Image (cartoon, rainbow, N blue to C red; front, side, top):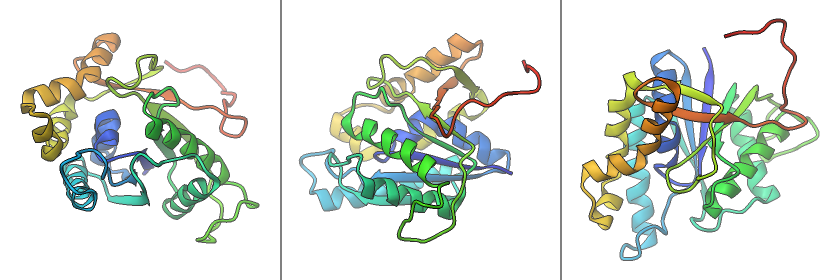
Amino acid sequence: MKRILVVSAHPSAGDIGAGGLMSRHSYDGDEVYLLIMSRGEAGIPDIRPEDLASIREKEQREAAKILGVSEVFFLGLKDTEIFDTLEARLMVVDVIRRLKPDIVVTHSEVDTHPDHRATAYITFAAAMYSSLPTVKSKSNLPPHLVKAVYTYGLPGYTPTFIPEIYLDINEFFERKCKAICCYETTMKHLGWSRERWIETWLSLDRVYGISSGVRYAEGFRQFWSSHLGRRAVNHLTW
């Protein structure tokens, strides 16, 4: 059994980028966790931030339940004020050391949204720091080594993102559609139909599917650093 942690800046982003992955791993019996940096309170001007935060958190929890997520965590950072700071890194280190994920999945570093891009760099650093005994966090939990970190693209935000890994999500696409339709507040604010909402936010699933010989797929890249880097293999696989 694997443990998967998906990290996103706001409600819905992780579902759009990796909802199929979460569904597949949950179906396979793995533990899937979702960490949201903020509650998305700045997205709709005519709803008070504190009210919108509660609404979007509820919608995210409903969507996560559909996707088979074991538990959802909100880090408590402010929407539009997510920055790559030591404090933010250590907050994510605490979560990683508590959950002990094998794999962490997050935004791409080429994402054009400032909150998304900051979340990527926070997560990259936290995945590395979590294994270092010299890095102390509030929880004082023992170090944990994350085996791999992957990134996902998002429609409209990652025009230069080119996947190196494609995940077939045909079997889970309808579940993913149902999950992202939980975000009715934003859908109504934009005046979009469900059909347009799905067509827009899951557009890359079709593109990645065409690119990989299936109907629907999600695309990922593996993040490398000096600590979480490539490892030699005994033989090639295909």
